[in-house]
Length: 292
Image (cartoon, rainbow, N blue to C red; front, side, top):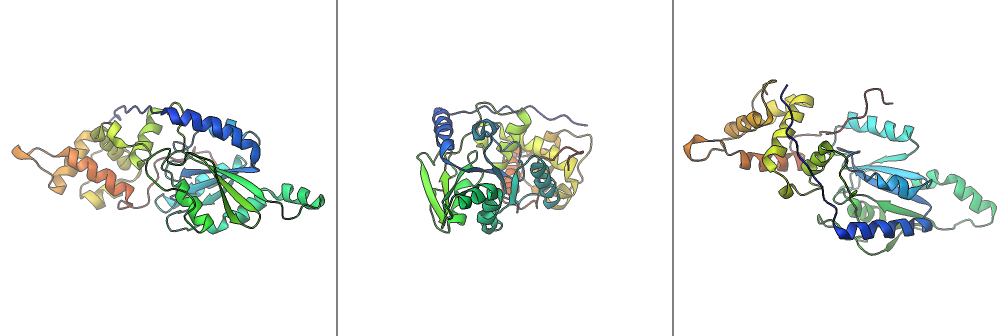
């Protein structure tokens, strides 16, 4: 079987180190932590530093963009995170699907704390939840849907959320928005590649054709029917990713002078179609086979 080409991603702007220090300081003021990840890549789109920063705080995992992910795979991920002690929401922040359950999920997660408050005569005391996530996983859109107003700045540029923002969701529940921070080092080349394919890391800092070629290999291995339906060819199980990319370009009629395949154009189209959901609901990461 054809091998994947290596793609390295390493990006940690200076402002992210400062943001991490601020999160560590603000963690003292919150009751729970809600982490937003991309449901298509729940591990690659996590910052593992959050586990250390959160300590023993109750945790909620929001599998966002679930509308773009393979629903069967997302269900397995939800079970996997619950087995590790997380409360879990499957959400699509753009449409708001799943976000209405946030407040109730938080109160269930913090039931013991609410009961302790009630025993001390502090019924109605405000719960505070920190919302964290790497850049471009939809964190600000998620917050705005929950708050039912434009409370957090939305942008595809990392680090737009810089200052501390307390946002009232409803009576007795506040959110603390935080800057999106990447880990100092991407966990693996595969994780970096997954971030780039989904657009969490800009593909302009990578070789886009290598990225697209590797993505076609992943499609062939997990979702071969997508290639057949969308690009009108049956992927050769022995071909490398660049050969698949050339075939896709030829099928689309993307040719340059001399009849050569325009793989650069095909790469851009392939990635755009995946990100826009035109290839269907696909996941790029899968829980261990023996997972719950």
